[in-house]
Image (cartoon, rainbow, N blue to C red; front, side):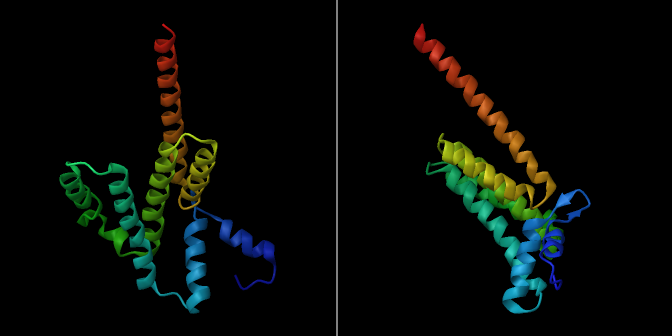
Length: 165
């Protein structure tokens, strides 16, 4: 990033790491460096783990308010905050990459299912791109979104067919 050439700076940010496109984690690392003039891995671990907390809050918001929320919330907490993910929790690069791709994927699908407007479709696609550029496996959110949209299309057709009869 010390190059004076803008193209070199952009190519450094957009460079693929194995099969992963890691633009968003690199932007997080760069913004941390620009803010504090050094890289503190402990801070990056906290930033990465905030995504898993956001994922938990997002799931709770999607569940809504019903009488079954408390047992589901406890099971969800045990699933998300388990000891098997300790390598991702305490490794800065993995925490930022692994947790934010899940967060952006969940956010994209939540936006897609929230309202059926063109603006929500575009916003869900934009957040899906954030998931893709966090890690390459984030592009799977587009497949899940397509299945959801296709399923809704089939349900709408059934409703109109039933309404016409």
